[in-house]
Length: 483
Image 1 (cartoon, rainbow, N blue to C red):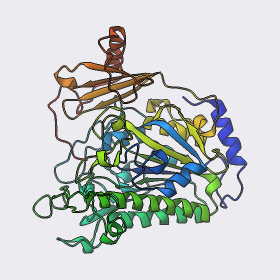
Image 2 (cartoon, rainbow, N blue to C red; image 1 turned 90 degrees about the vertical axis):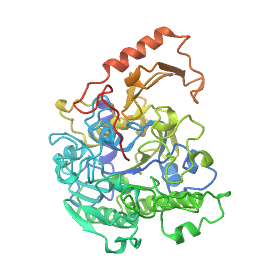
Image 3 (cartoon, helix red, strand yellow; image 1 turned 45 degrees about the vertical axis):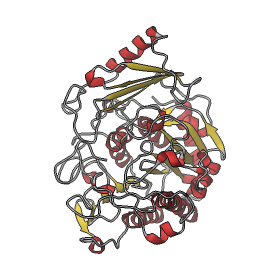
Image 4 (cartoon, rainbow, N blue to C red; image 1 turned 135 degrees about the vertical axis):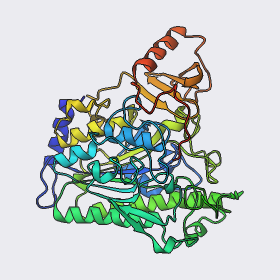
């Protein structure tokens, strides 16, 4: 799964670094993985967005590499994140849907789930998660502190993470009440709170010389379009005509997953991306100021395509960059995501890569960076994309990529070479659609009738690429997930 040439390049690059903090060993770079929530492929100015600018993320791209064919784990939050941390695609990873627990939280990762956090702890890293978890309800075996995370601050539940002024957050296993947000008060903006904790984590570990992994799982720009009025005022009138969204401002779903009203939805969306960009810039600037940029790789991406909820209008902003589909789709617009990586002195600045990679490739990439193998029992589906980041021609390619989605009667997709197969309504006998992405990146011309032999090939892959789990079977009744 990992190329020896990639390991050799990485170790040579790391040991050639200067200015590492005292006590930090060679061949163990710090890793910062910034995951936006529902940010579309076209929602960055470096990816063609013209309505607003993202100068800080663009700067990261100019200092590193922009990957144009990077894919999320699937088209919704929890299973996409499960793919990311387990190194397995949605036919194998333990969490394959947004299955809800009754009060707060989602279906938990198993107690024995081997993941990137545990791997990094075993190899001397301090691990931290800031923002949204969504992989195990409070009190279950899936909570961050039982899955290899040393420090967690943020939302446990992705449904409650719809709301930006929650009445509580979590610090490891402790529920943290937010007095400024009790009742109808909206005085403590959650992205400000977990962002400060994330900066403290980077600063503390850099000063102490500990190699660290920070998973910065921001909730921006997911769900309701709410943020402090002064942030929205800065974008007033920039995205006309304006859009008024009437949502949930009282009642049992208020701050419990219902989307709050927003009379300036376009300005609010622009303001949220502006805030996201500013916070990414603050993380990068902190890394630079601490003198650890040459021993810290920063990755920025998104968990799936753009959403159309809570007043969001991805069509207005061309958030899918002309690709077909949005969140919950397995067309390109639902799963192809922006990807930027910077590693000063190692990744050549201003480069672009068309290497086809997916979330389940992150774990083996981390193993390449650390230089220690992942146990074979982890059954990884991924392939390290470190060679592509470093400009090495010896980059291994996938035979195919596979996705599944367990709402709306089930969906599957396979990408193999230039060909993409998509099947909707799996549980009710849906038929494969077939597209040639080299000729038709918008997936507008279904070629299934013309290439029956390819349809049969993809049917076979869809059947063999997955295993049933006790919870996620396509034949099971459709459940209502929240993310």
